[in-house]
Image (cartoon, rainbow, N blue to C red; front, top):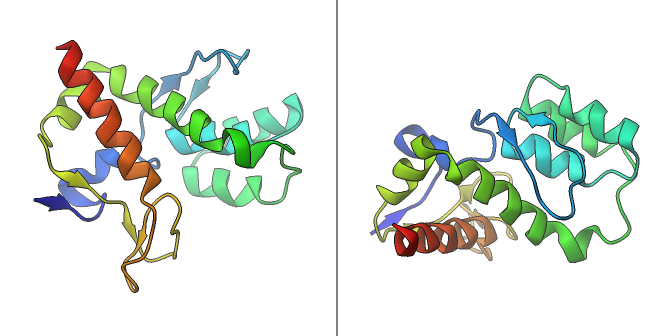
Length: 149
């Protein structure tokens, strides 16, 4: 069985879902609250504290994503983006509420089907093509949580 989109009952899997994170990772010296995984991910792309905080304070993940596109991106972003995403997801799913919701997906294949043609983090709903890295990370974290239970 597959979950093909992170909407409706499975919207909590989305990076845009409100999750109030305080992410502590070896690469993140700032301990500030992030409204969503997307806020953390987009802020992590920046090269200055000022730019980082300009993303953190935005009131929606969509604004965070759009505004980050206007800023200078770290030169090593492509090498570290998966690690940053995983760190944010681990933080989100260490919360008991989200942990249980993720565990309730049992062994379903998690596919971040999307209509914006993201073939790295998800799968393009129109072509069926995509690497589905977000889904893979979520399934890896779910597996780890199940082992620790």
